Amino acid sequence: MTQPFEPATGPPCAPPTTVLNLSLAGSEVGPILERALEGRETTIEEGTRLFEARGAELMPLMAAADHLRREAVGERVTYVVNRNINFTNVCVKRCGFCAFSRGHRAGEGYFLPMEEVVRRASEAWELGATEVCMQAGLPPGMDGWYYVDLVRTVKQALPGIHIHGCSPEEVLYGSQLAGVSVADYLAALKEAGLGSLPGTSAEILVDAVRDVISPGRITSAQWVELLQTAHRLGLPSTSTIMYGHLETSYHKAVHLHRLRALQKETGGITEFVPLGFIYEDAPMFQKRRPAGLRQGPTGIETMKMYAVSRIMLHGWIHNVQVSWVKEGPKLAQVGLMAGANDLGGTLINESISTAAGARHGQLLTPTVMRALAREMGRIPAERATDYRILRTFADPAADPEDLLAGVENADARFGSYGKLIGEQRFRFKDVYAQGKRPSPQLAGGSGQ
Ligand code: SF4
Image 1 (tube, rainbow, N blue to C red):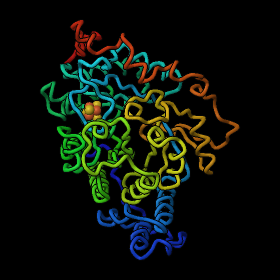
Image 2: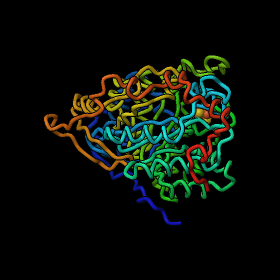
Image 3: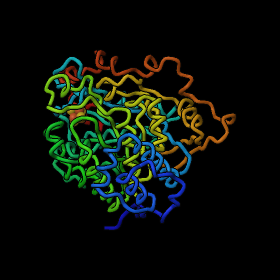
Image 4: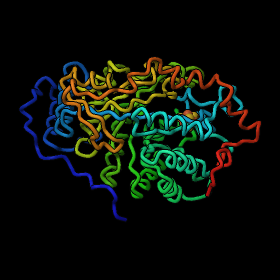
C-alpha cells in the first residue's frame, strides 16, 4: 500500500561534535552521545544507559539533546491554540493510573451532549482555536458509531477546525461495538472529518507493565497495529509515553524504539509527548498499590525523558512536546533546554490530569507561552496540529491581540472539571434514566 506521508528520512550526516564538550560525560555515556551526534542510531541498550545517567553525565546528555533539537527544528518554540473536550468520564475500564473515570452509576459521572460539545468547540473557534481535542472515557451502552457521528457533527458546525480525537483505545472500542474492522472504522472517522488521532493509551508499550497498570486495556501490539492502519489511511497521529510508575529505564528505551520503528514504516507520527504519571489521586496509588510504584517522575527523570527521547527519535520524530499541565510551566520551560521544542496546546479545559491531582490549571495563554520561549532566547510560533507554522512572533511589539489572555476567570467562563462532576444537567445516569443513551439519537444523528 502506498504511504500517504512523506517517508521519514534518516538523520542528516555528522554535525560537528566539537561544538559540545563531552569530556564530562564519562567513558560510558560520552561515546553514546558522540555516536548520536554523528547521526548514528541510538540502540535500546544505549538508550537504557542514557536513562541511567547521573551526576556529571547529566549536563552533557541534555546539551547533546538540545543540540539535536536545534539541528532538527531550529530555535522555534511552537504551540497550538486548542480546546480539550473530554465529553464523558464514564468508562467501562479501570486503569490503575486513571482518576478521571467513573462507573456509569456514579454520581460524578457526566456526559456532554453533542450540542454542548459543539458549543464548546464554537466558543474556542471564536477565541482563535484551530484545533479541538476530543477524548473521553468508554461509556457502556454506547452506539458503536457514536464517535463518527460526533466528529461529523462538530465538523459540519465548524468546517475550518481540525478535529484531533479518538484515541486508539476509543477507535478499538467503537469498531468493536459497531462490529466492523478497525480499518473500516478509521475510514469512517476520516470521512466524517477526523484530522488526526492522539497517540494516547500507549502508556508503556511493554505488556508486562501494561498488565499491571491497566489490565484489560488495548495491548501494545494492537496499539501499534491500529496506528499503522491509521497512518496508511492518511490519518496522522501523535505519540506518547506515560512514565514514572513501575517502568524501568529499559522499558522506556524499548518504548522509544517501538515508536521509532513505527515511524520508519509509516512516517505518520507528528510528535512525541512524554506524560509523567500523576500519582496523588490515582487508584493504583490510593487503593491497590503495586510493589515498587513510584510517585511520578522526579525533575531529573523528566529532563532525562525529554533528552533521551530527542536522542533516540532523532531523524524520525522531529517534535518533542513538554506537558505544562503535568509539569507546570516552570519545569516545562526547562524541558525546552533538554531536547523539547513544543509547548503543546492552550487546552482551555483539562480534566484528566486535573482529576489525578495536577495543580497547574487548565489554560496557558499564547501570551504566556510566547514569554516562556522568549525568555530563553527562542522564537515563539503558533503551529497547526500537523506542525505547519501558522505565525512566527519574532517581534514582541508586533504580537497580535490574545483573546484568551483577555479572559479574567477561565474556570468561570469555560467551566472546570470540578464543576462538571458536580453539575446536575450533564449527569450520565440521568441520561440513562431518561432513556437517552449516548447514541446518535441523542443528537438526532444518523448513525451508519
Ligand atoms: S485511562 Fe481511559 S480507558 Fe482507562 S479508565 Fe481512564 S478513561 Fe477509561
